[in-house]
Image 1 (cartoon, rainbow, N blue to C red):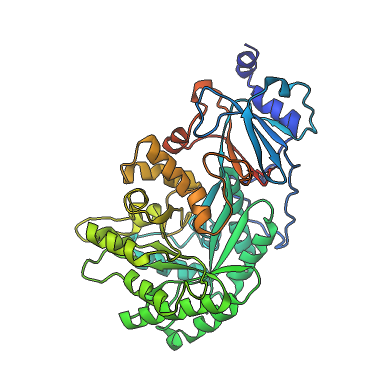
Image 2 (cartoon, rainbow, N blue to C red; image 1 turned 45 degrees about the vertical axis):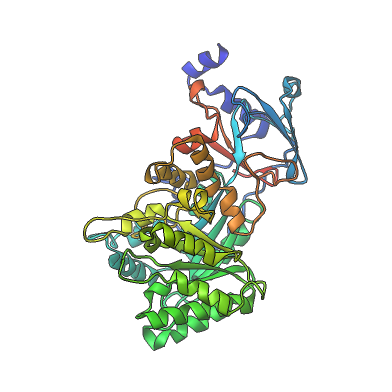
Amino acid sequence: MAGAYLAAAGINLDEEMSKIQFGSLPTAPQSSSPFYPPQTSQSSSAVRPPLSRALTKVLGVRLPRKPSSTLWDVSISDGVVEAVTPHDPAARLGLRPTSSILDAHEAFLAPSLCHAHIHLDKPFLLSDSKFSDLSITDGSFDEAMTLTTAAKERFEEEDLLRRGRALIEESLAFGVTAMRAFVEVDGTVGMMDLDAGLKLKREFEGRCEVQIVAFAQLALFSGRNGGEEVRRLMREAAGREGVDVVGSTPYVEADLDREKQNLKWIFDLALEKGKMLDLHIDYHLDVEKEPLVWDALEVLREVNWEGKAGKSVCMGHCTRLTLFEESEWRRLRESIGSMPVSFVGLPTSDLYMMRTQDGRKGTLNVSEMIEKYGFQAAVAVNNVGNAYTPQGSSDPLSVASLGVGVYQAGTKKDADVLYECVSSRAKHMLGLAHSSLDLLPGEPADFVLFEREEVAWRTKKSIAEVVYDPQSRRRTIKGGRLVA
């Protein structure tokens, strides 16, 4: 009754109680948009907001794989789950503003989210006034390359940090605590994008784990000087402290021979520098063109990747594989065997970019790849607000939700898999510690809390509900600390 009375007066009781317990969270800079900071210069060494105090317990939550009618208390110690026990209402009594105990008020708690593949240097180009003249006119891949190249010629540290910071902050608010972030290295931007990415990685340390990919979007063996400059820069970048992954885009080479050269060179570089590898590969729908994935697997065997303890290899896009027959899928699974190879579907970008003359579109059916064939796979956002992907947001759950329709994956089991594709499966592919949907003792205390809605019955109570309809206020916990 009190809640209803206060709501009628414009007061959210849960929100006010939360402020009393934890204090107001930092507010975003004032601007004409609720998401983007004003177009003013700010220091490239902006101070990271202080972390909230550590939590020892989260009270009264609903949990995945538990009956939605039950409530639980999650105890945390040294950044990991210590215990999950039936909710004790008495634990709420006498809570103080300085308490390390968070009363969740029957909200839904699940493992935190992860960007398995996102571009940190190219977000928000369509909404940033600095690039307002670079608008889409025909929506083709070639146009996207042209517009992005033109934008890169104007990149400066200030806007790289501003846009990258906005992307990470928004992602944190959605529940993301880890991401694999691509930054380009080439003759146009030199090391500028990489330097900005490494600064942001340090700035958000403790709040969001940012894996930096030194990425060759341009050809390594075609174009200007036969790609020599890009190779030189990539070799330098791969040796930088803080770079976790190297990657390339073989399909931009002038012919198949140079695509194979690209593969061999980037595999050798990853082995030499001890880095993980992430490829943009087979990004087309040409049934007449043999998929390069077979060549990539052959190179893995030639360089003795497993024998040399090569780290994980991820392949993104791979839209050509959507034309596979069942026998080809089974052959691919056999060819991979025990090698640490995984795939990332990027449906938001793929469905916008990839189309044949007869109108056919394609994106990896990640649900089927996992359930039917046993691949390691995930889905991810890829781009936010640029010519490659003008639509969508930085919320990984929006991609999982899109998968329900694209993959016709609407069961509760499907929803669990799709959620894992932007959470535990994605983190596993990135080589990161992760929590399962069972939230077992010893797993990292990295969570997203889907808060109570004003209309009580609309409050999320299951994984299926947050995948079907991701819209919800969220709080983010990393290592047992409230970080967003």
